[in-house]
Amino acid sequence: MLTKELMIELVGQLNDPVLDIPLKETGGVKELTVKEEKEHVSVKVAIAKLGGQPQLDLQQQIVDTLKTNGAKTVGLRFEELESEKLDQYRGEAASPVERKLEDVQFISIASGKGGVGKSTVSVNLAVALARLGKRVGLVDADIYGFSVPDMMGITERPGINGQMIVPVERFGVKVISMAFFVEENAPVIWRGPMLGKMINNFFEEVEWGRLDYILLDLPPGTGDVALDVHTILPKSKEIIVTTPHPTAAFVAARAGAMALQTDHEILGVVENMSYFESQETGNKEYVFGKGGGEKLAQELHTDLLGQLPLAQPEWDEEDFAPSIYGEDHQLGHIYQAMAEKIISKTNR
Image: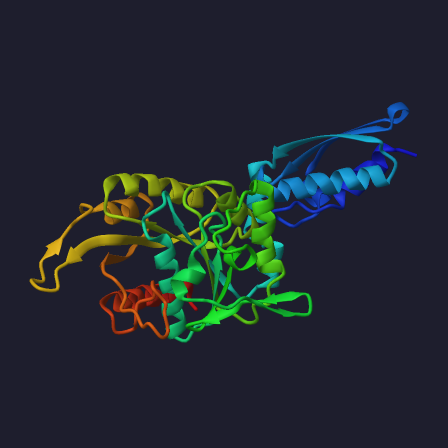
């Protein structure tokens, strides 16, 4: 028999998808009505953050729970939890992924637009942290534009241990990427919810082992994947990549604003393609202008972690990794200095 009290109890036992706290504790069950003659239940639920795969998952849980217990139809509305409730729980709450990998510091590498070298920064920061003795994982979360395996010269595929995926290790960094799960050069034609599930699987179904850091190479902009990462990893810190060009820095500010709005701490700004230095004369040419990274850091109230000149890595044809700079390369030194700043800022 459908009763209002039973339905409230059932829905209240489900967890807020961001806070991972039962809805009955957060006060998330705002309204619930039962029409017994039509076996219909109408529910209004407040959660910590609207949109994305977590809300869709909770929606399905609510519908399944109510139908299993006698409802034929379910009407469902969502609203955002009151700011007072969010303030009460947000500081304490960690997501299921963060609790599973509780000793790991997550760092998302973001940019406002493509073509600024975000993936190059991601792979080299990961390698630089590993060279400093840190245990590092790298998630290629740029689902549509995955490039990390190619950049690092990875040719093998992940292994399998029972039901868990074993990431590929290169330069001391454990790597997982969409590239491992699609045919070469095949396009990924997926909608947002599928992308969110894949990102979540990169954490839930991968055997990472003990790590100090997991870096995420995010897609450019503020789309579905970036939103899902903010929900899956509410305590992640961020690094924003830009070029010196004013337009690139202006667009990158949107990615920074998104981080701040979702309570992600910004570790700093990396300015890529800062200048070109002639090997013959030593003169610096500011091909893309000057000042964009510094201005962006000021706007976001954070530090400028480093400025990277235009330079090509030295390639080893027998151990090919086209985007990784050696320890003795000019950019290798800059990446190491940035990695040292990250370690200091994160107390690792």
